[in-house]
Length: 281
Image (tube, helix red, strand yellow):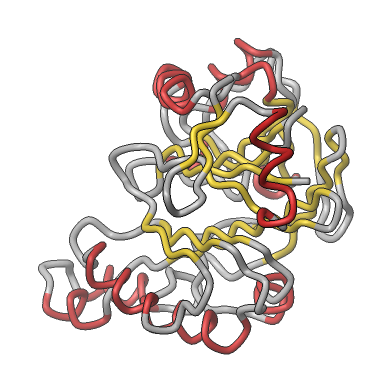
């Protein structure tokens, strides 16, 4: 059994993450246009027909701007907390909005999605854990500091989207005004490379297959720098930097060694030398 994951876009210009099994999938946040979601999924061999729901982490534009059009076009329910919904200014007329609460799992087919609170400068921000037959993927972005909720869920993950927003030196030396720098560094801002690395080193389970370093700042971080930083402590975990300009590959998460032959026979995929699967349907 496998989960398939991809970052369709990750950054302040838009965030959208795909998590699914062979039958159904969800999107966490849609901060890029419907057209871009469709184009990027098509390039990956993924189909919108498998997407059964959208989950929203918080109300910032880079996480919700594409939701109304995509949800209406494909008749998708949008799961969102009441606190977040009250702070959204977009018109969601004819969108099926469904509430969720922290620690109350939502069942989408065989996927179980649990939201849990996090620290961020939003009304009611949540991160998510997606569970499919004991394979778990976490989405940990837009976090000011790793609270107990985040730590506890990160330690369960076979794969994770983990925010590495800024390098402390690059932020300090950069052109941002001091007020914005304080917001980014604050307990309700974003995770630095160091904060994310400390979480990774201290709580990464031995069975973690992949980690996608996410929501990198265009001005205050460097993909090469952060990948090298994490690779030093990766052990058997594949380190991927999620792009703010394009989709990632589709990664197969789970006990891939035991099931690889079955997957190759039953699911049309393209496999590279690192064991990364791109679905061809």
